[in-house]
Amino acid sequence: MSFPNKAQRQQCWDSRDRYWECLDRNADDASKCVDVRKQYEGLCPSQWVKHFDRKREYLQFKEKIETEGYDPLNEQTSKS
Image (cartoon, rainbow, N blue to C red; front, side, top):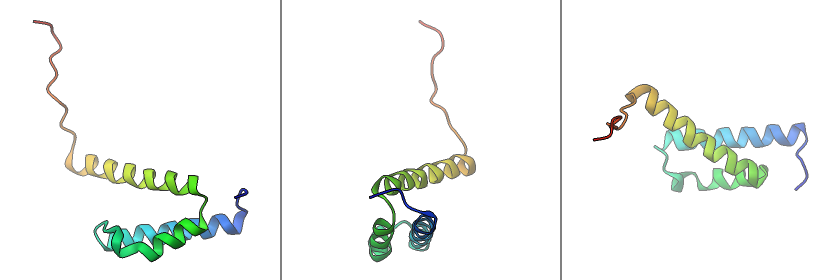
């Protein structure tokens, strides 16, 4: 697939947003968003899909850390 032009990029981003909205509405149950996912994969280059999927996971992790806080492991700093 060649590099997408402006209109194709916009279609890709719109399909990604629709897929993410579907996941949000369905508590991340991807089985309820299969058709939207197929459209998303059809309109976006595969490397972009991988990137956007990782980005969503990162954003969810970041939100969890920001809302629930960070509880670091109890590390020993001195040798016994």
